[in-house]
View 1 (cartoon, rainbow over the protein chains, first blue to last red):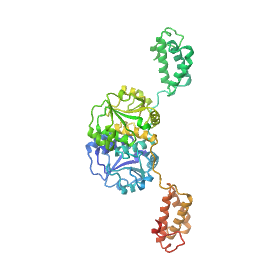
View 2: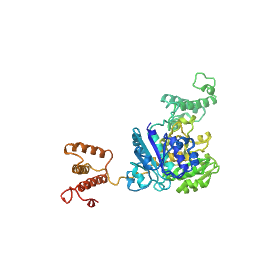
View 3: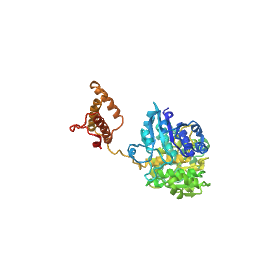
View 4: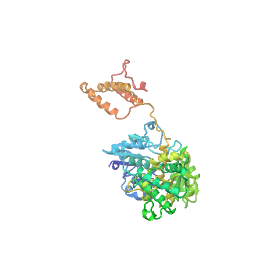
Length: 254
Length: 254
């Protein structure tokens, strides 16, 4: 798995809460290799609390004396910075870099580096980074919390890896013939309950068609709408005992 | 601005740190309307600390007794949930919903709702949501910190709004003619310093061409590479005092 080859490196994190939040974000997004470079000590209780169910990542962290050591075995080394400066012109967004990171991670280690809460990455540390990541923000508030920055980068990697499958509707989009049967029943019902008169029927039905066409209707949706109309027709006293019609009492329409 | 019409609603937040983190994320991503529904009290000092430079959003929050009141004036109401259940089949990702949210926000208020840290959104609260948001995660760790979830949703809105402009390179991609002048100088230099012999020259130069073609070279990049080659040629004693050649001492190559 490409994601297993991507290391999140935190340089001199100050706050345990941020380290824990990064662990949780990594677990959410399928990453597991956390490195801490040049640790200056952080509150481990806070880290555990914010890591939540991801303490296994916290416990498995590797610690390095310097960033150079933490990325020594990595080909692609990406550093996140919000600063402007000489290197800024080369910065790309996490979404732009994600395919490159996954491609490099297929054959070797990749590092994604996040700087100190108070001071980011030094120029010497940025020099170790082959690529610079800049997260899109407003110009007025460009400084992200380090765990939020890591979350966005991890999220973009996870999405780019294509490992998320969205839920499918239980039934597919209703075919026209089924939809037309539903509109036939609604027409009959709305006439029967006196909602519309014969001469306005086509106009009113166009309104209902428009409303029900704004989103996709699944087969299940159309069955619910048919059941509602049948029940109203039955309650209006038109369907009772008429076995030749589509109209059935509600219990039979399970 | 569409983003001004999008309200972030937190239902019964427990931890001030999360409320503050949501404020900071909103400021990063150009949102400003924060509502708290059914507050049960949170640590305001923690909230201020995590809000960082975004305390103006915290201070301007509106408080409502219930979620129904908090979204009463909103057309589109989107609720974030990681739970599975009846409604899950209709969930879409923040990236899928973002254009819809911006479109609705052009003409009216939109709400994006986040549930309790410990208990998410109730079924009655989800019923108020016209759309369900599901953030892509691994199946093993689907539960995001609420501020991380809000950040991803705000980030997707900001990106979809097209308000971020990435940095441009200071100079454009170098044209072929300039690149060829650079390779000519490198060829002369590498022969002069004895790096390659005449019969291997074309082969070695193809290697250098391949290396320097893996990424885009800007005009500035090519000037730097030309300067390096000229300097090496000069230092090798070939250029000294030869005013007819391309080769100049380093000080003249500012």
